[in-house]
Length: 228
Ligand code: ADP
Ligand code: ADP
Picture 1: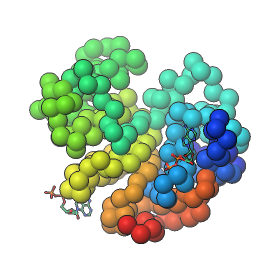
Picture 2: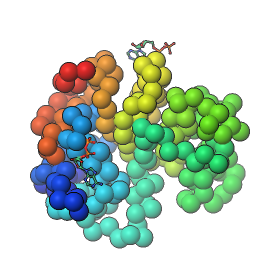
Picture 3: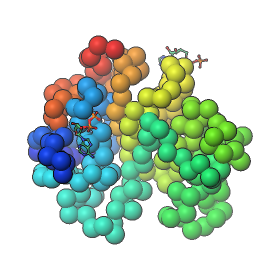
Picture 4: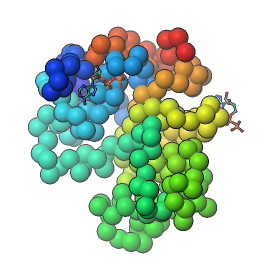
């Protein structure tokens, strides 16, 4: 479902962030991406939803060939792959409802279907009662839950989370992790870049360790493997 073969990414400034990386991720897997700062984790993840384009190699995501995909088809890729960020990236002038509905309006025109799905994903993250709030009226953990609801609104096959607990305290981080587990249990592939050694070491999943733009460890039920 995700296949990278001998992938390179060189940024315009000359830095080679990904340096001959190959990996295969099957449908429904939960994968942690770990490694030191600057190792290439974010670049690796950004290539999956085509925020960054590889310089060389093969990348396939579902039926999409990311080396040849046309600009006009990238919106279809973005329905296939949902993304959650460390800093949430909610739209501050829109309510919780509008933030999620907005992500769907591009795709689904039927307002009744949108309304149904917005309430459904809010239920899943436990924040139905915050539907009329604005992002700045919510805690960090609540904002991240809304961001997750938005990311899954279009029922993506893959959910990518780039340091989703990076700005959150330990208890809130666990709440976010539990939601990601639930989404994974529903069959969605989850790929999570993280520095949270506690979570990685307790909730066991496949671990990909990235260093110098390559995967240096690929371990089922792996450990975090670095000093916390
Ligand atoms: P990580 O997520 O593991 O911290 P990144 O993928 O962000 O690693 O970065 C890998 C390398 O690429 C680093 O040396 C970083 O400075 C560089 N890099 C990341 N993004 C860019 C960019 N947009 N332009 C130039 N260099 C970048
Ligand atoms: P609260 O928010 O009431 O403190 P949490 O659900 O955050 O409760 O969890 C309390 C503790 O339980 C956490 O510090 C963590 O160590 C552990 N924990 C929570 N969720 C999990 C989980 N899915 N797997 C393993 N341990 C967990």
